[in-house]
Length: 563
Image 1 (cartoon, rainbow, N blue to C red):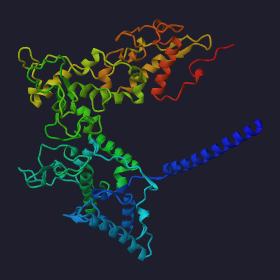
Image 2 (image 1 turned 180 degrees about the vertical axis):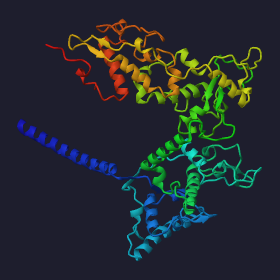
Image 3 (image 1 turned 135 degrees about the horizontal axis):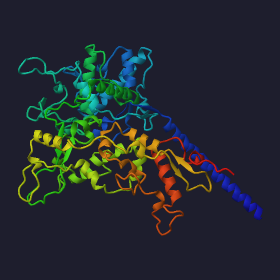
Image 4 (image 1 turned 90 degrees about the vertical axis):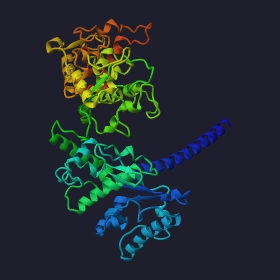
């Protein structure tokens, strides 16, 4: 009886296992089908009917580049699907603007199915015909989007402004010749009275200062504005016979391979231009300035911290885009991020906007991203626990200097009242004495080898090539001015490993002075000597992505003890 019950339970367990296995395989099959689905940069979701209410059928997944290639083979171009207005194609399909639900629906069905039917009559391979609704309206398309964000970074902007193929459409008032700057070709202001755009010299802003993610009553969405302007300009240049134009297909902007080629060309163009070139040629844009608070409100106490001397031109060359620091507009940070916080700045105070470590657009946050690179992370990964920087680090940016700026009794100097050229001169004065090259102790003061004997009972003493490591770390930061500024004092480089050492000291305390052998139970936050060595060395190797020695390769550091 007991044996039969065991067999019955076993059979039941096998049945459950079989069902679970089948369900798992089915789920795995779906997952694999989705994972193995063709990933494309030209996947467009057509859901225009959502504007009229709930969709009757799933949206249409449309492969744009696949269709443009087919049109090109048939010697057709964009006008096969898009209407033309004032010499420019309209992004919407076969219409200038949306009308009624019935008309828009008819435009899509007649346009798409009609084209397919014409091709079928000619015996050509084509897409779905009338009645095959689910072939287009598929809730589970067999393709997935691999579209990367496009965008105009500083280097690509420079390639546009320096291009002879995109001359200014305006003439110089004095000479009558075309202007050297071609900013008018893209930048514009909107006149609400005339409902037309116009060029305002000196007021060039970012596209996103007007064009948001979604369209508004007065402006197109960022996506629509970019496609209307960029694609049409590239197309016009191509029709004129210009050899090298920007892309008119999806993958040309949003594909991984194309973006890599564009990045290489950007790098080549900037390198060829030389060190003194300005990537963004905006009138009045400062090379140097002071970052300070706006005029304090009545009764506000003076601040003790000095303003920051900011090298705008240098930072411009070390970031991809102005949006690395700025948001929608390129105005001064203090305009929105006030000392007390304001609605315009999302109530993020100026101090937070500059120092919040987790914010990508803050000074400290941006620097942290640079420090996360493998060549820097070996040291800086060890320093994450520090929540408050040393006062010496603050003075690297907030340079203490005697600037002759007028101040009312008991108030801070009126830095906000300085003219741009006065701020530039003041910043230059403060930056005069700031070292910007990394420094270390002389070679003879750096021990060549350090012998670690803490595991001699199991392995031979470990010989660490100390000097070689220090020189390699110094080499990693020699081309970075940011690293130069913050590592200008000899001994700074030592602080990551010798974390209780005094800056500038050539003889830091030994590890065993703090990390006992064996582990001290009374101090649980302080690892024993063996754990300290392994955590420090292995964490550094991992952060720097060093392949040798591995964490598990004991004899890579310690030779086996001879028996």
